Image (cartoon, rainbow, N blue to C red):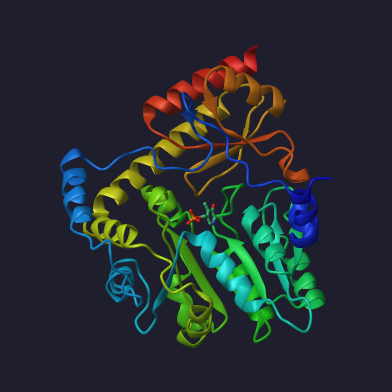
Length: 364
Ligand SMILES: *Cc1c(COP(=O)(O)O)cnc(C)c1O
């Protein structure tokens, strides 16, 4: 064994050595329908204006660590209740790490619980923080198994329960009353994180309900709205909780370019909202068109992606790739996702190209 391998064995955690890195498919030359990105751009004149704003940013100084201006804008424009603040993250991925780090106990292994299948980072981040992850399988119709969730909460006493609302990769919204039952069951022993990454497409939120629950955390991101590249997430909760989480946040975690771009986007948020409206309409059309194809089951979606079941997902995935269409084959993620593909809703042109490719893939 070379000395670098010995060095790795001696220093890097065995559970880290055992896993594979987060895989991102190379998408060059493909119609990219695998990552829930907004396919639209800002109009030309706004891009020029954005360029001027970014050029005016002071790059030689650290960001102003309070991020007060951007946070106030987010609170005022994005429905955060009066008296509530937000914490910003380098994507909501970082917010998940911050929550887990803050809750990873030192005297015993704390527990993170989430329905499965759901967003993979809930499990991965819990592992990295040294927490135990408990996954509670969804029902076959992809709804939350509330009795099983409540049982698992009683048994495992999770510090954090992650609820993707709507759920990635299934696209459905869990029953709001079930989420309330989970919040009540957790009481003062655990917090529920309602992850609203797809809120622009679901138009359902727990944000306004923060004052009802001391143990509710509402998390969002601008990624799916059309700004995945700038990496900005935010979360709100009772001020006393945010105060604790903020201690774990790296002090300058949001860079000045992201900050300026986000403030610019908030000045023009109506454009992003119009794009979300287009995508919601396209979602309905795409769902109807896919359901008309032989052998395709379309699951209801409140997000900017749609889960479908086909007769043979591996075969369909490979054939779609040969048509230069990249979708996510989620069939191996969980038993309830057997033969399922996840498709990001895109422009009318890309959706048509995808439909033609899917139709050909299923016929061949
Ligand atoms: C995409 C996604 C995120 C990640 O958001 P970033 O802000 O880009 O890190 C978080 N939660 C869910 C459920 C997602 O699907």
